Image 1: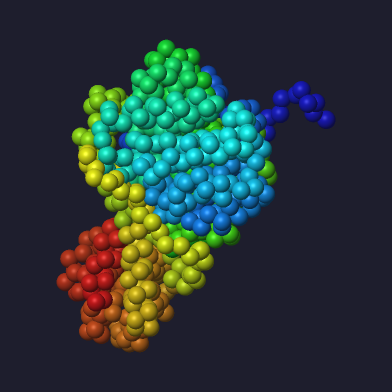
Image 2: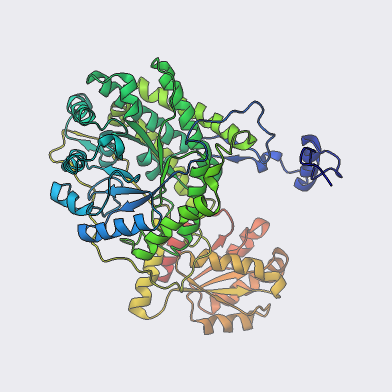
Length: 622
């Protein structure tokens, strides 16, 4: 029997293998193709290698306390305050350890939220809640819509609760709100004094931690990159530090009232690296300020831009990956956007799933029990380092431009985000950035998903803005494909059927199945039903099957070998049978001229602009 002190080598019977041996095997599989084909690229231009060696001399990043779980925050956004209170009590009784309070008109409200911040509203909202019972409360006041922070502080004081015993984050986030609105009532230099005064007042009342939020969400929501989100959050944090110091708050106290928030999405490794990078970057700023670095508080929210209205249950999977990634990256608190939020106000089921997504990972998977599990991982350590370098460069650009407010006024930040947003949109259109259930593997027969009845409210405007600039408007990546699906639904409602395309399958199942499957997913992503032909090389039989289908469009599907023999004659037969527009699944190669001459109007293949092709298909259908 092996003793517990004996080294266990699971691969002891195998000879050790090194990078050179691995590379030799890879080159054999590539068969002359460049190795760079395997190297991925992020939107910041960072290279993601297919394999990494273990990082040497790696050290743990100080984040959460050892084996301490992150705070399981539950979003509270029901406009009916009585129903919101019921939701709060249900959430706290069923595993949530914190509350994320959203108000109508805020940048993170997503159209819903508590109607106002009046003392009576907050009293009703928190009825039955014990503020000093170990729960966390994150309040998100809306700039220019009443001071929810002061109102809640007064409510806590009225209950004779010691502020020191309350885990309260009052997320004053004036600058990030201004960025989303694209306007401000005054220049930041004029707002700094009143802002610092509000914070100082709460500190004097005993609320001395996490009163100001450096929120990177506006960049992520607008389609920006990881480095851009980090640089923006850093600039916000530094701007608030300067403001608070100018307002008479010592730097050591000022940093204690700061917290950060980043988005977590389904990019597992980049998300974990991003949260780790923020800790390193902020420590560098603290050192530059003459402070000894302390662990900062980072909240995470699952990404709005990755939510889809179609096949929303896939959003559960995306959220699970996001929570997993943020948790491993050291997030102190995580809020899951319910999977139906893009459709409307989530019901009890959606809220329960959002809560349980975290509970399972914390309580059953014990994900929080290992401190910084990514430490030493070659890939994540490399991404963390490279993100730090890229974000620091962007951060320096913002500072050279005069700080975050000046950089927004000049359009520096918006220009960089817009370029990334455009590149991301192109990848979504070409389905290189896959949105399962929307751009890939759609379900045209999905049933309606229940949401609570509530009318969305727009982002709160600035009354008579003194300064205006381009807003960092939020987006959801699936929206262009969802608009096509909406057109399909409208036709189904008005005419009783969806638009359709006949898949003219040539040859045997072995010949056409792969491309017919691809074409089905391709067209149905735009709401166009794919009608499968049985498979034939007889032009007359193909034409008859097309006519029987009732489709206006047709798409040839088969192997390159079969195309060479029968595609031209099949195309001519489909044209004569009345096909308005004919596609061919696959790249045309040397046959393109002959195929187009025969009547093929377009080609669908992996990497083509699916969105443009589908939009064009509707012009032929209509």
